Image (cartoon, rainbow, N blue to C red; front, side, top):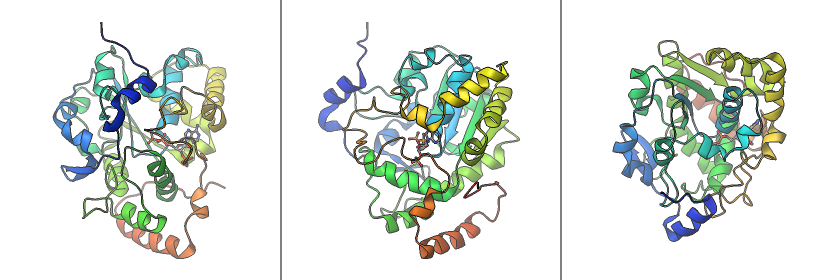
Length: 314
Ligand code: PPS
């Protein structure tokens, strides 16, 4: 029988094979070298029609959406949803790190459908089996400035992704998104990512959620997910799920706050995974000049879409 290792033990055994993996171009999208090296098996993954995909650009509230979905599928049973770390309950499709840390595909192979699967892949790189099998897909997006701030802090503490470098340079890197010399950001352009899913969401029956809407009215958004998944969950359990997935409760939940990920991977003394969980924290980072420059570029990059992003909710 295969030995089941804790993250702690797996990371210890992986030792020096954990480092800030360089990014490699996969069909125009910069992905970690471990993902690029295993691209064939990732892209050939074939889901069951009952499998559900949670797709996001990094740092938009993926973990929040995952926890809500897991609770909805288990009728709000908090104990069942503490059966394993979120990264095990809902495997990360393209996650390849250093063996023996299990890859997303390793974890998925050990599970039976109906599985819930996380991905950060842009829509054009999602394995075609998801569309052929008409799997349900939930996409969560977040306003660009808060997304950028959250990603900046995450790349400081995630010791498997390239260093973000200084703040001012990071803004430019995020705005570019693509492979151009070394100014690139893992999973590519935020602009292309959010627009790609938005364009296809009616045709492909994708539920498109916004972080700001979830913050404004979590119960309303949890109900939207419930209806999309055709789940009969009572009003009081929806209220309970909203409570269990509040920022503070998730921050204190060791199965959701990534404290299970050892320090050589996520160094939470640099920046916690559950950092602030707010809308509008970008005002504490962007100078007025940076904000103006970003907005001007944003207007150009987003002129061909009408996604109702909000940069504040009050
Ligand atoms: S990842 O690594 O891409 O999966 O990260 P992701 O989960 O997408 O994003 C992390 C950010 O989401 C915030 N977060 C929450 N906000 C509000 N409520 C809840 N429950 C919640 N859970 C996670 C988390 O704090 C990160 O945002 P920042 O702005 O950095 O705090």
